[in-house]
Image 1 (tube, rainbow, N blue to C red):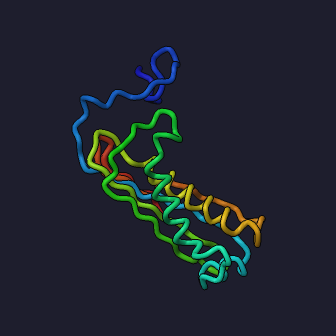
Image 2: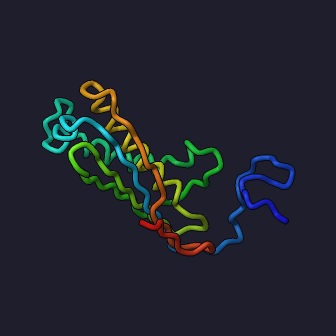
Length: 159
């Protein structure tokens, strides 16, 4: 039986998967993360009252930049010619910021890691911008929510 972990060869050595024979297709991935914080911190972000500036716009740019640099951060990821990356924010209750990123590409491999990197880096940027007022923030629930394209087909996380 072949190894189901494609980033390892038959001897267990790490390898970059050869995607050269795969067809190029449109591929999309959507991921999310949650940053939990004090209600006062979320209000500061929401009301754009932070002395450092607009926290969400800085985090949005950080997320997009993170997606573009995924292959530099994750050793076996292929560098991809991303066609689109979007990062969105939603206040959930009075103490949670939900971050969602969508990455798109026309390529031989998927963009799941780019979407996951985007939400993670955006969450880290929120933490960095707000740590002076709330060191107790947590980053949680980083997850792939949906992907499409490629041989493995469509995936959607059950709600």
